[in-house]
Length: 338
Ligand code: UDP
Image 1 (cartoon, rainbow, N blue to C red):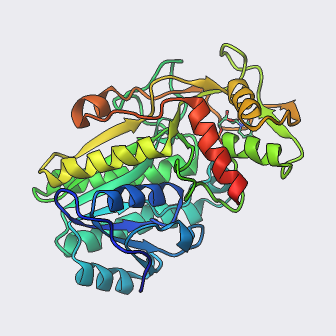
Image 2: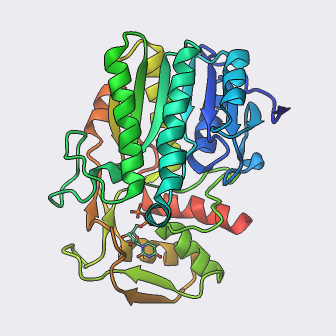
């Protein structure tokens, strides 16, 4: 165990929060937000894709979720008030190639974690879920949490199965509560440029545009220009990672305040086409990188936009960075620093 940083000054009620995957992209932004609120944070991360230097607050335990003894000992020692569970494999494409890795890392590890968490008397868990649980929504309209759940790839199924386990457990137990946050397209980076997305290989459009602007990618392929959308390219709801972190804080406060188990969509409620993302990236970077028009990427729904009304209504979530330019700018500042 090594102390990564001094704890942030206390503000409000300080709680102990165990964050699995807190050294990853989204986890590290949530750890930053927890630290800013004075919480005592313990990150449990195997550093397979996460990085030690992304953990700005608290203590880092380098460990794998398959190491149940270490996990159990960590929980017994730290005695958290809540667990936030980010550690997972996240590539849709890879999940199709190697589904067992995904069922192991995302479903089995989550079930084991929940078991140990409950055995240790922890009653609150915030779970990282995904819009991939909706598969291809029936219509080009924002989806709310009641939309049909029908993933079209193993990644989506692994998360939906974990959600189901959480729901059944919560229904069966009076004590255990969870919030599952279904992320749409998360992008951007810390405004101070300290942390950001750092995957060994990124498949995400904004990061790939920036890699193209840096010359690390020779060409940016647009996958599919014949979709039934305004300009023929896919529409996505890009949410700034700090707004997503705020949603996690709101979910945590809800649970710690005695709130019920809930599922929330996390997005802004409007979409941007791939062509418009490319335009924004060219404008922000000032680089006219090369773009080609390619065939569709298998498994891409044409239109995937959140209806975040429930999150706004129930958790009083107020997005602060609903601005594609700001999202791309913060991502660019981070990307340039790598
Ligand atoms: N996309 C693209 N070129 C790329 C990467 C992605 O055209 O190099 C498209 C992709 O087909 C999808 C959209 O950008 O329509 C968002 O993809 P991303 O992988 O960023 O997120 P996803 O929606 O798959 O989670």
